[in-house]
Image (cartoon, helix red, strand yellow):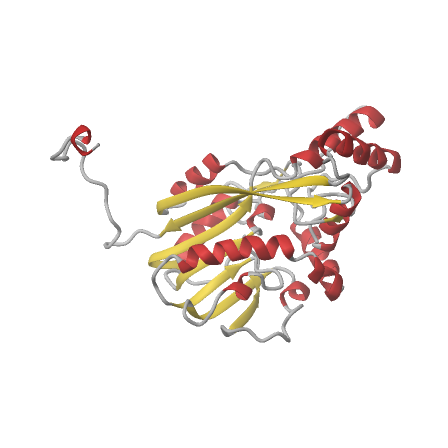
Amino acid sequence: MFSLTARFRAVPRLAAHALRHSSTSSAPAAFQVFDRHAKKLQKDRAASDKERSRTVDYLKDEVAARVADRLLDIKREFGTVVDLGSGSGHIIKHVDSDMMQKLIMCDTSETTLYRDADIDYDVPVERLVADEEYLPFEENSLEAVVSSLSLNWVNDLPGTLIQIRKALQDDGVFIGAMFGGDTLFELRTSLQLAETERESGMSPRVSPMTDSSDISRLLSRAGFTLTTVDIDEIVVNYPSAFELMDDLHAMGETNAVLTRRPFLKRDTLMAAASIYQELHGDEDGTVPATFQIIYMIGWKPSEATPQPKKRGSATKSLKEVL
């Protein structure tokens, strides 16, 4: 997400490139953009200040509620559901015993995972330290997998989606939410202009984010069927760019790109805040931050999966129906 202090919701980060070659496998290595260990440490540090980190749960809680609503739309009572990249527990706040019997929360950061372990929920919770890139579940073992705002930090998204599909039982469902490409465009453009002006060049400050059409293709490539992708935007207003960046920092959503620069110069930061206010500021003096959210649903194929009719099999003309 971001390499400064940030005071608002989660954010993604720009790209860097690096190839990691495995000495034990002949398969092509995944393209490496993010430093997964650095991201874990950032989440650990953020969750260690429990009270502060709870004040910045608002965005993740809101998106998690919308993911839970999509799960609720499926008229089925699940036994066990896996929350991949659960953080401290955002989806668990919005589900009940009528939806599932148990939720398995998975996250790379143990500190984040157990931040709210003393809170009782309507649904029994199991916590598991696990990496989204290396799922610990057996094939055909899960009824449903959900994920809210965590897959942005995955280097091998196609591989993770394939692992999710394999772990699902036949007719199992995956419901996820990710940041879209227009997320924090105001902050991104302000930083780019400020760095160009003050440092005669730009560096990655916001991570690469995917497009809705990319998600559709990735789900199909991973073997999901009956895929659904839709987009939503959440706009939050802050007193200034500094409050936005401070919240991002408190959420553990700071820059984890492999080739990230260690700091941002003070004068560049001040210039970015001024540009942000000038280009995007509202009349009341606040600045908006846009979060584009891509929601996705995919089903693992089964014998019961509805199939499209053969081409030319229609018995009525569409003109007659309309």
